[in-house]
Image 1 (cartoon, rainbow, N blue to C red):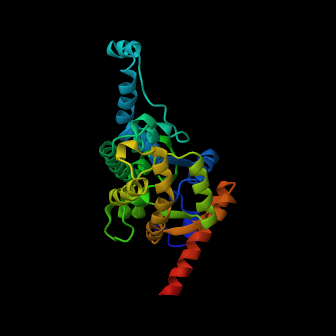
Image 2 (image 1 turned 60 degrees about the vertical axis):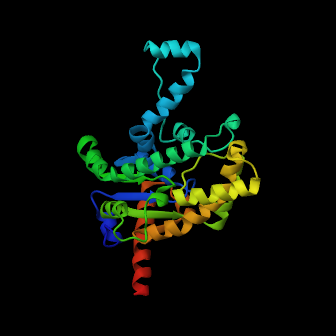
Image 3 (image 1 turned 135 degrees about the horizontal axis):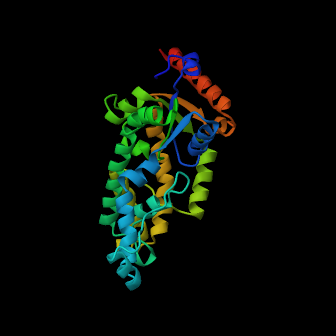
Length: 293
């Protein structure tokens, strides 16, 4: 950890924290809270992915659809209209829409090869966006005058790093410059996330080997060719398996930092609450590690 103990964190003139865990457990809420309190730069990995690294892919998808309309085609060809995504920290729909879902094209599905291609684009973009954090720490301070930095990661971070590998280049870079904080959900939280997802399934990122496995299982269960399956049914099928597969990967990442529970995060209402929680988590982690030596 970059802080020797809780006191070192509390007295640090420039705090640097990276939040990770399942989507829906409070990462962005905490980051927004700190930004609103003042002095904290909020770096959203998903926003960086959707603007810097995949923004052109997303805009081209919109333009491809617009070119199917004669009027919009004419306006685009004459540079009379401008098409771009309006992605924000709180609205990542353009990025999710581009990622898409495999299956029947009549129900909004993509060919599986195209789906895998977009997944690979996302993987590369996520790694690049994570490695950008070091530069943005300096940029936030030198350009905008923010002393503190909070990195709000994507839920899929554990898919593109190996927390069990002490030489993983992304993990090493992140741990050298941030306090890594896992927001750990309970079984009840996971069940609630699954219920929410079932009501409104959304595209997700899967690491390649896991995607291949889950897709094969789904096709075998459905007994249909890939072009005829319901894309949303696949998303629902894969989601619970994805959450389960991510838990040990998050836990491996947590060994590089500290762990807090989603219940603890839910009680944070102010910057002071957040700092107190980080101090508690640091001392708790040091105590646990000392006890296991």
